[in-house]
Length: 233
Image (cartoon, rainbow, N blue to C red; front, side, top):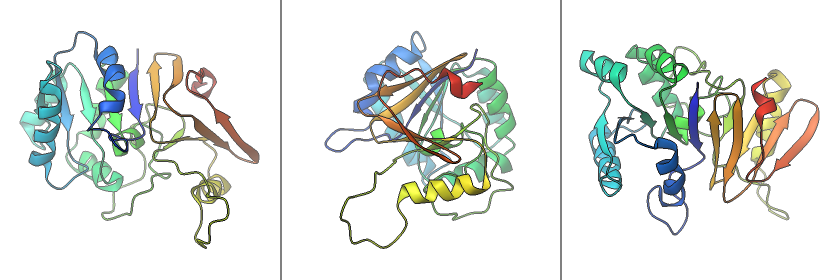
């Protein structure tokens, strides 16, 4: 049974790292007292892992860092759970591809290992990374991601600002452009929202809502607590 907790963001304004979602994370991990952290989305991987390790020490949960070597492959094979952190989505996917860890991570998640993601870590859980907000600072072999969900995720979703003088595209316009060329819908998660999947059950959770974008259809507003099982069909 696939188990996913996919956060739009790891830090909310005025709060500490993961504070807004920690109750949900604790419930999601349950008896797990050690997980494997994937730091590939940032360049300072050791510093990133140290930050995560410090945050979870207070929760009584130990953290080990996934490394891009044989030891990392062995660690992933035996991990109780995994947390894929945020940063640049292109770099994250590129590193997973070039280290040969993308497929083992997919297999472990499909096999029921709890998968916690934030921002870029949530992006790569979807079908592709085509709806990330990040700049392509590296070029992955392809945009195909873990495919743990049959749709796209857009974290950090920003609503259009009424009366704004900004002349660039809004996030909504960019997602509509994606749908001009692609079929899978997009779940746009505002900061403070997350997706929780337990097998065939998918629910929007958090303190704010999300928007679902589909081809040739007005965006659908969904509130926290909404069941989204139909998106898994």
